[in-house]
Amino acid sequence: MTETQTEYSFEAALNKHHLFLKPLSLETLQINITKLCNQACLHCHVDSSPKRTEQMDERTITRVLAILAAHDEIKKLDITGGAPELNPYFDFVVKEARKLGKHVMVRHNLTVQFDGNPQTGESKEYLPEFFAEHRVEVISSLPYYQEFYTDKQRGLGVFKKSIDAMRRLNDVGYGKPDSDLMFNLVYNPVGAFLPAAQANLEADYKRELQEKFGLTFNNLFTITNMPIHRFAESLKRRGGYEEYMEKLVNAFNPAAAEGVMCRSLISVGFDGRLYDCDFNQMLEMQVKTGVNGSSRTRTIFDFDAPDLLQRNILFDAHCYGCTAGAGSSCGGTTA
Image (tube, rainbow, N blue to C red; front, side):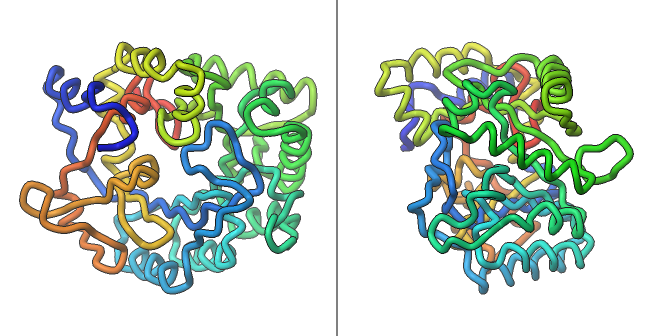
């Protein structure tokens, strides 16, 4: 049982709509390489903060690279955290994955460029040039295009730092119409509601950021706040958890369910354990393979692609967050 309440049965919704969600591919390997972050955002499902110490070590990262080298079907490496740039092997894994011809994506919070490592003081101002040199796709959360709402979710002063960091990315070619350096933004609602239509929000963001700050980016991804960890605790303190869950349940969309990211992705924890997605990782719902999905858990050190493609994906109530409305994933809407 997870912290989400068992009365919100996701399996019941799947059965009602005759949906049998099995893995389709292993296109993306997503690695969470640290829980350390220079921020402590209200909506963070990882519970990241400047005080966390969990880091993926060199042995595990080397194994990740070996898996990438051995599997041509894995096209993408999605690096997340925390602030992934705070892992001491971040630069190494980016360089080596690019040498293997993999498309590398980094979940970059923007402000780490200026804050650096909160525990060691190491500067990260070099990141825009590093990203550009290695043709990394940069994906950054910006809760809103107005200062008040962004700072409300992510902390005082974050908006101004984010704008300055975006300008530095634009300056090296990211998000420009004539450039292949991809710079995508992520929108998380600042509260217990579903995101507005992704296309409409993207148009609003592009207009406002261009007119007010002269900034450009490629795409906006809308992501629903997941009812786990820090956000769930916030809802419960305010007595709004049940209302939010009902909102997600009532907005269940079978088309969005068909496109959930866990069908083409494997998530790797900092310690090498495998999960269906980053959200399951934070709830310690580790991948199981074998007869009835109960025979054994898997780690990056016994990675078995055919076996993983036959696994039963683990679902729970928080999965309603990915299937409500137009759907939600690390790449935005799914329906």
